[in-house]
Length: 97
Image 1 (cartoon, rainbow, N blue to C red):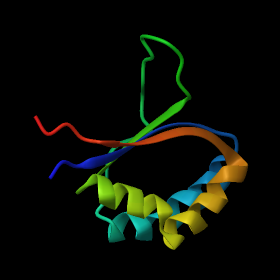
Image 2 (image 1 turned 60 degrees about the horizontal axis):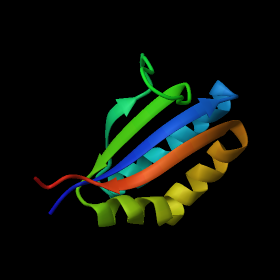
Image 3 (image 1 turned 45 degrees about the vertical axis):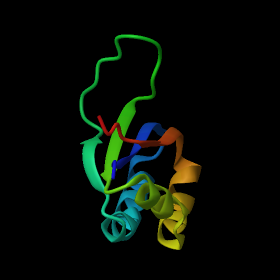
C-alpha cells in the first residue's frame, strides 16, 4: 500500500493565532498516523511562485490522509486556521515504484 501525503504552501497573517491551529490539529494527525516531513523552515523557490511556508505530512495511506482531512477533529482545527492564513493544499498518493 502506498502512503498518502498532504503537501501545503501557506502564508500566515497572524502567527499567534496560527499556533492555536497547530496545537488543535495534533490529535487528528496522531489519530490518522500523520508525520511531519517538512514543517516550515528555510526554503528557496527555484521555479515558479510559492507561499512563504511549506508543509509535507506523511500518512500510512491515501485513505488515512483523506480521512484525516475530513475528520471532525481536523475540521475544528481548520476553522482556526482559515481566518489567519491562506493556503494551497493537495492530498496526494505516494509513488509505489
